Length: 83
Image 1 (spheres, rainbow, N blue to C red):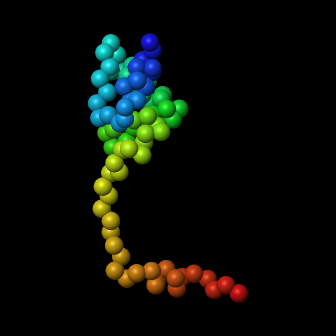
Image 2: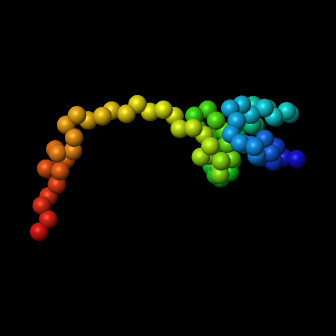
């Protein structure tokens, strides 16, 4: 069984944080993961690895939201008049 097949088997149940595969060297595993991500077989984000079609199962990274106090009035004033 190829390394790629073993990775796909491990990820079949859902996203994982650590991918432990026996008999795989670190460089070989990293290179294979990058090739698989480029072919959209897997998704790697926020420290998680998942099958590409399971990517919705990875919780989004919390992003601080900066709220504007002045609203959108200044943006609307900059729009050109139609007609």
